[in-house]
Length: 420
Length: 139
Image 1: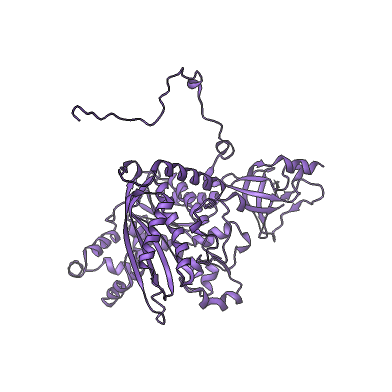
Image 2 (image 1 turned 120 degrees about the vertical axis):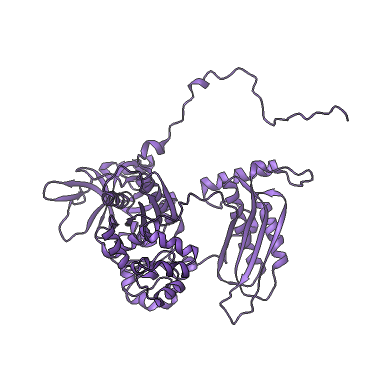
């Protein structure tokens, strides 16, 4: 058996945890740059606010119904997510971190007979200890667990937990699930299936073997097994150390001046260097890219990237920035409205394996000491307290985060203040 | 250039003096995180503003360690939400009723009635305060 634990409206739930006034009120969280609604409370869904609706399209609905709006506070969500995942890990021997708000739990070889009871305990513990509501779906395969989770949300709202414990319950769940809502079936394929008369997941698993063989790809065949209760999707463990590290963001508003873009790019390069140091690695090359907004058809379009090899592998902020600027000098062209730029650190190697080059103009040992000192200061006194002057101070390019809540759990200066 | 041989060069000092007699007695330094936070995943920190809990040793600007995993018992200091607002008070209850009680005679006890929406958010387990705040309260 597998369980899928999913945090309900996760970003909204995180905001509510530190703002009890929002309980029972419509709340939405916007994506990066305050673009679209990416998390909605049940009350906001009831107002007809759809997933991924651009904020400007629902301005009237927001004003009329006093919808509380938040920018994404990934620092907060990341910490709460980690608390949830680590708490889940205490219940089962194996866990697969699926996304910031979802995890698969391995329910084999447990001492429990009644998995429904375990599901309820998991849900209640996460609610009490962290304050985040979750739903739990338990079933024989990952695909079915995902379906059971959806089913729990829809038909077992009170408990939020569903265990497809026997064939009758499985059939009931399959019959209540449209083919388009099966994990792994895209919109196009759902259309194809419904054209062939398959409406629900139950219809699909009752399809004649002949038809299945003729019409299905390997991937779908695998999914078909999953639906029949035969595990076919492998367990995925924690991802290995990153092969590439990318830092890139859309600008808050379109940029035209090279100086402003350079400042942004230097910050992204510095961020890459920091991430490299945090995982004790260096990169051998970097890729710098720059692009306009494809969706603005009224604008001239330009998009270019360039890969530059480093003289010797590095994770020094100053050096990575130097190469990033070199790249920008080559690819930047005047006269365009730029939307986005970024730096990708590539060809990553462990830093102890870095071989010194004989003609290296850079004093590696000295630089390493400087970086260590800088990281230490920034860790204790605050992010980017010490930085290179090219990184600038104004951050004109910065994302819009007008409605950002506090970093309640990661910054002592931003903790919850309580009037008592 | 015959008979050359590579010798490893160690760029660190090799101690040659008498070894410290304390070495065998070395123990890990006291870690306040470990002492004050028993359930790290369920623990949050908040800061007090105001004087209603002054006689419970909570001056303004005190950092409160709040453990959500504990069930509130009669007499615990709790972080609670009352009609959408956070507050910190003593939690008192008997068979029939419960109250949120301040520790300052200038403030009244709050009896929790049916129409109120009160929830205990977590139990306060430690109070960390700058001595300067305590001194200014005693003046």
